[in-house]
Length: 483
Image (cartoon, rainbow, N blue to C red):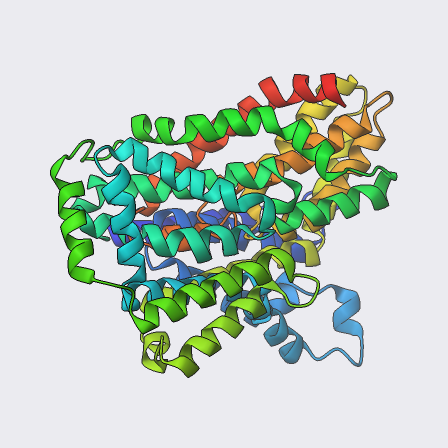
């Protein structure tokens, strides 16, 4: 009964919105698309069917009804516009998204860590050194991300491809299993610390998130302002350091692990390391390949995209026997996440394609007429942050909304555009925490089996609100002082 109710609610959300006429200035097809998108969000929260299936159903519905939900009358009137072909092209557009493939690559890295036992070995080393207290393990996870962040312009590569494959081996050492009640013993805590930490480090450094670099270019094009690496770090460091120190502890309080202290596990880990013996051939190969991937992710982005670097390493794994083809074809979690995120990317891009995002920016500007500069900054930043619920990609969010937000701010007399710009770009990393699809690594941790949908949405709301409040309470006055 509950499953059918959860299935009915998203449908009702869409139907109710469709009963209303489109707001003034918004095209009918944009309103129809938005109505379906709201139903998708409800479906992802309630999960009457798996998230990937929700996304697949949505793009099929929109593709079949594209004359009323996706394409404008001008497009439909063109003699050279083939509706079936264009509908299909849009439906599969998310599957060629680089972040989607990087997420898939991260799952393959995790499989290699598990198969070669390198992940188990590294997890045992962590447990041996810090395993007496779960909180210390949380800080070890945060530290690992922080060390890599300034040099890795992809949080999916950094957290999903490097940190996750290692920490995914930790829960089993404590009897904590995915998709099981035992997940709360320690696995859930560690996964949540990992995803929140990477959102914080993505904000601290301009080079820690690809959309950060994009945002700097967009700001320069829009208002002629150049934001340097040093300026970014100085502006974001106080808030970032505070959150980095607080996140493992806050997670410990708000999402407490069942196991908090265990003196026997470190001793057991030391014995297990002795049993593992020296590094095997495949472990050494994997370690070398992971280092190659890190070098490419850090220094090679001008020559090869992070996603292609991941695929290159996976190809070498297959050639050398570190992975077998059956390891890839049989990884249900990877393919489920791949479909889930690819469909959401297409849906999110559709919001821009139909003009909904442009309309939203125009309407937002009219609402701020007569506001004080400080009020305008706060309202724009809050709206920019919360609208991330509509996006499955920080890159798409940046591309679609940052120019609109800057244009709205520029229309407010007396506003400090440097301050507004820095507040907007500094929020890009933090906003990734609010949904299970908010940033590249999110689907990986959500798909780990340790973070149920209800827990993820609840914690995302709590931490997302906390991050936003502290951005305004600490980040804003600090940036006013130093910029």
